[in-house]
Image (cartoon, rainbow, N blue to C red; front, side, top):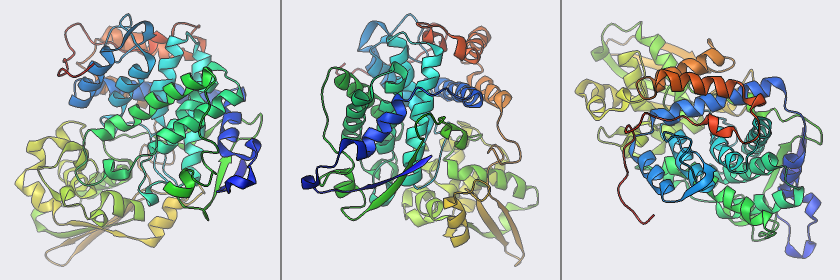
Length: 499
């Protein structure tokens, strides 16, 4: 792994292409290094994970809308759409839009947290869609997905977006473009132009994750995938891009991130070095924002020692800067304490999440967010007794580079009305690779079977699981086998629009 210094250069310096971050990203994508067996196995896990959460959300509002829009762009020999039979295909950028929304809607797939946030599984829908249309093989798809994860995760390690109020899809779109380039075996020059175009068009604000969080949170990564496919298409036709996109004096760093004096150090694999970043990411056992995963597990553990929830006077969650300011009381979002808030907002309220987990001892992707559940009087009373506080030690561990030190949990202090306290802490979720019960293939399959039960047929579930676990041997032109279809008549139809 090599560290690459990235800073703004004046136009008169004529920064050489070889010294530009986008060119180096393209070089990683164009390097046809063998994908390690454990990386291939994890890619299969994450395809299963994506399919599970996509099917579970297939008839939720944003997903219904995205699918309806995609169906307005039918294409023979196109890409498949979750829920629909494999014979019904659409243009790949619209498949990426529909499938990316389905994957993201429940906020229930994988995550990587470092200098910024990310859900690297968002790389899979657009890369798969292009692979289907271009009739690529399972091995091609593996190479493309490994590349997408590698680029996004390493950008997230090095460049903070949220500090400058930019949404994290700014690191996703160039990763998706690079992954598509690797899938198709494109030349470095073509991928370079596609990456720059993807960066240029994907910078958006974090208002999508602030205040009253809307359905755009689900659409955002799907939009990035759509933009990435379009960027690669243009680059393949010989079109260029704004350059240098990262280092130019009017570039994204100069005006959207740290400014002309900012210096970033981005790690990327060297020539011939395996792409292994996916192994540093982690999925979710619970359908909630990742920084709440360990705290949900902690709530389950602590509730066993509480006899009377009415006796609680106050709960303080001592945690990292990110958790406090993004999903905690440090965000100063009144919506995070509102029983009438949207599911998307409740998903980003650790106060709500901890209260429900503490009371119920379980977490469900639908029931735990139901309006009736959120408005229960005793829950609202407990919820409003919870606050978060930034703890420097938890912030330090959040940013630690040593995997054994890195933590996303916190220490919880429950004070009772009689003056007694209950204190416990948990650094990582049980499902984390260093947790009490790390997720393995059987856990991904169980998650898939649980989330799809009653939605797809047992036969369809078995067919998909057999195909995906044989991914490395899938021949060219058979990636449509990775689609998951619902029984006829089970899909809701969206409202009419323009398409």
